[in-house]
Length: 458
Image (cartoon, rainbow, N blue to C red):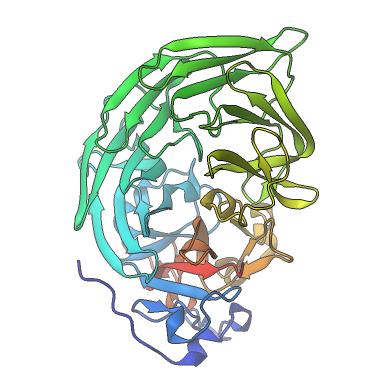
């Protein structure tokens, strides 16, 4: 598939906010929403108008191919869906039907089993390919490691849970189904090392998959919870909190074989997330970051070998870990803002550069500016052009993303220059047309489907 062409266009297109959108009075059969930065039917970038890195600027916008229609299943928010997949959208999942991940300079955008690779820097469309078209699925989770994809889904026909490995090539995907029983989820964020991916099955069974070739290294049933970053370079750690006076337990499993190495009891009544370092520490965080909100709780540093408590801090949530200069650094948010601590001592690490991790970027997720319960009190025009609001740790005030219709947040990543960018899917507002009875799918027509990115300005 040819790469998208980048061409300049009138600056006035960029300067028209959705606040100026209107629908002509009378009995017109079409909407008359004003164009925005994502309206041109070609790949465009912020280089065309010189506002790269500015808060709220569209970094790039790339057209999607084919006929799209708005679906209101699941969340009841409008969702641009390809006509050939419109009947397959599972109302249980709504917007989870589509998504994106970024890895090594490429955004992998997916609609069910169809994946499109986009250059994360320029927005150029690289290729579009599908996984197992004979068995269409709703994709429930995708992660990218070293340029390859691990995909979990639920088959549309049988409702069976399935997992696939897909090696990314210059022109598409070389995929195969993984031989794992009933995979439930990819452990979120940091249970993924550079070389392997951990899949969770039912009843505590874990599957460690080689991310380079999709081979299942081992499948074992483990005791306790696997959370956040439970993998170090040598071990998988599981954690059970103490409850009702009964001691909790931390267990350690060899990453090479899945065999249990040892465990020890503890009296720490903490839930939350466990972060394992490669330098011999465990960090337990009762506060967790989900969507655009971080709860606050006790954070403990433990010696991973003995369980000895090394340090404790009150009121915060761990975002991620980083290896720096032979030591591990904890990145967290607390009442004092973003903090970096030495994982062994708990001391502030002032010499560590500002947090630039994708884990931080992904705490800034766009959410609709109106609740689904407000639908009856909102006009069709307002509902179609409802903006998303991005809130987060470093934003002094919320950021409004208002350049699309039916806009949905997909993911976020950090650029080579350290900026934070959100990835969205939506329809250019001037490309929305009213539903017609003779159409191949229900809902409003979207003649200008787009994947686009927005600079968060920090």
